[in-house]
Amino acid sequence: MNLEIGTPIPIGLFNKRLAVLAMQGAGKTYLAGVIEEEMLDYLLAQKETNAKLIIIDPVGAHWGIREKYPIHIIGGDHGDIEVDMDSGRLFARMVNETNISVLFDLSQMEMEDMIEFVSKFLKETFQITKTPTHIILEEADMFAPQRSVTSNQKYSSAAVDSIVRRGRGRGLGMTMITQRPAVLSKNVLTQVDASIILNVTGQRDLETIKEHLDSSGLGKTEINDHIEKIMKFQKGQALLFSPSWLKRTEVIKIRERISFHAGAEPELGKPDPSLKITLIEMRKDLLIHYLNGDTESLIKILKSDAPRENVWTTKQEILEEPVEIERSDAFEYNFGTTKKKLRSWAIMITGAAFLFWVMTLL
Ligand SMILES: Nc1ncnc2c1ncn2[C@@H]1O[C@H](COP(=O)(O)OP(=O)(O)OP(=O)(O)O)[C@@H](O)[C@H]1O
Ligand SMILES: [Mg+2]
Image (cartoon, rainbow, N blue to C red; front, side):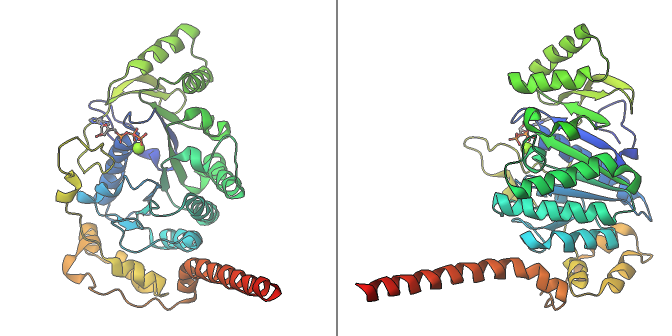
């Protein structure tokens, strides 16, 4: 895995725990894109693999990966199919049974719904996974904060904690990305095998990074030197800190991305570059097969002798119209929205009845 020009990081990253720490706009999502490209390159080069990559993106900044790489997108503006807050368990089972790499774009969900989806998805994934699976979690501090505010956050935090502490033996690894190292759960940050630290200037976050570097037994002067560098890093520069796993603590240069960075800041007076991007077309029928309960034919397609990239991207075979979803799981899949609608109707009817009753009293 080549994040930098020169010395690569071993591909055995699938079941490892990584933290990407940096302030806002320092290049976290750009770097995550480089990690994704390297992992997908590896997966595509394998004829048969049981490994997969899962990206959880609450901000809608990762879809550009599909300019160059075949990966299913679920949810968001560029999704093959929609995502629903109640479908976390169903999608966890789908990814596990079919070994497909998936990007969950949750950017169209309310924050509480996102957290509910992620807690169900991660909990189920932790329980059923037995093969190498790497999860990239954007805005990890929202799902595993140092202090959980809502009950959903408590559940998602517990799920992240299980994966980070006990996932390795099941093949599970995670890259946690945060712009607020100080508010990410200390329990998970202390477990990581490697951290990649980009530019940080905030005092509280620098204190957390100091503590983090200190845990490895580095000397005070060395830590202060690293902090000085971190405060001055330009885009593309980072400190790789992995005293136990890689036995390296050094400044690295992040290589350029191949695929489109959808999270790029818009430049004044320039047209939106995403308008020119063409995404690789995916066989969304594969996902629909699963939702219809036809897991066997989906697995047969995925295991066919055709080269892997053809299986994923045969354009002429993409179904024009998605088939109807019939199965009970599909009911579970659609039920979240229905439940919400029913709830608002019930509130409206009760309100109207109450008003009517008040008026009859007058
Ligand atoms: N290594 C790099 N080389 C070139 N440009 C970069 C690099 N890293 C980041 N950038 C550019 O800097 C800007 C911010 O990058 P990015 O979106 O990755 O930041 P971020 O840390 O994820 O920000 P946020 O905290 O808002 O999520 C983007 O326009 C991106 O293209
Ligand atoms: Mg970002």
